[in-house]
Image (cartoon, rainbow over all chains, first blue to last red; front, side, top):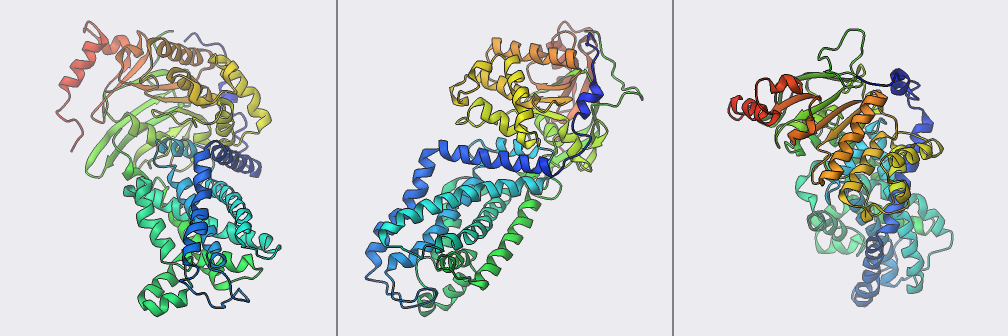
Length: 287
Length: 258
């Protein structure tokens, strides 16, 4: 070996022997959030479609249905409201749902198993990496939600001004829960590696079987079974959490259910990405 | 460069120690009783055809798959029980590209630095130095999409070195590259190995990448068929290629596929 005399020990141990402290965690989170934001800014088509989708619902679907579906006075609303106003919180939740699925599943398909590998060789613990990834996605989706709410103002969706502040924790909690669901799906379900599958089997059923488009008492009149499906659908609770928060109120049941599902999904995601127990090893081919 | 010893002396802690590692995907065995060690400064070529188990081995070493049977340790840190200090010392160039095409070179490298908990102020000079070394310093503000395949690989090599690892793993790093890019990468890594005593495991199916003096591990059907310096592997065969073909032909049919 013609090697130059070196400080192998010092190299290998440089800065590592001390272990990883809170500052390393913070830097890592910062880097992951920054990357997610940069990617979002650079992928304009993704940004535009994320925004256009709920606006199409608002401008076309809601306009068409406002005279078909009557909405009586139900909390948190204090008066008769146009249909647009009713579905706006559901559309905000839809933004969070799409973003959650997209950012989690993008790790898997689209040559992105690679980026998951890159993330996983970080010396920081896996639960932290997954949480950081989740938080980064939620920050991006909250920005999208506010842009939507700003545009929706022109459709006479005018919640009280402080509602824009009180909705923030609801957006964060609902976003985390839906993002965690995406992580679980990305780690466990191989067949959902294309987005069409996710649309058909996750996004549409969750969106339609929820309180996003129609009050659940309407559903109850139509089918009791469907009503219960909607009631246990976490997306309904995400929607209601946002709906009440937008008017400065807390739907405690929804908050509890969303938190509960967040914890369940997070545990499952960490399990799914655990190389020892989860299914990540099984998804790997031979080479 | 002289021939490297195979045994790791008791006084030298191996950069990488793999012992009796087996791995299976369901019924199909991918690795069967694989064991070897790398010392600091070793340049070792893991030679095997597609499907030999190279990527599986890399996934086990980097902790992506759980090492259920056997032991893997990096500078004495068991990858299963003590992954953090082990991973902190490893740099990896993956078989698939893992760069964000829409981000700039620098943004990609800063992201990697943050995954290792590095401060931006500490990462900046490392990034500048590593990009300089692979000849891409002037392109640091360019998006990765604008680079050629060979340049992207060089960025990935620079990235793997930013956190100053002591063990470098490269999984088929030259696949799809032209001759010039291939030899650039190979020379660059061998220089690192010699100058910085980096332990390197270079997986490939391209036999000529072993050169004339590297240490070689021949992996086939999930098993190690031979290991040692190139001259030893060649033995009385005319070329390394011939020696490799003989080894593979002599291996039990379908190898480890139980």
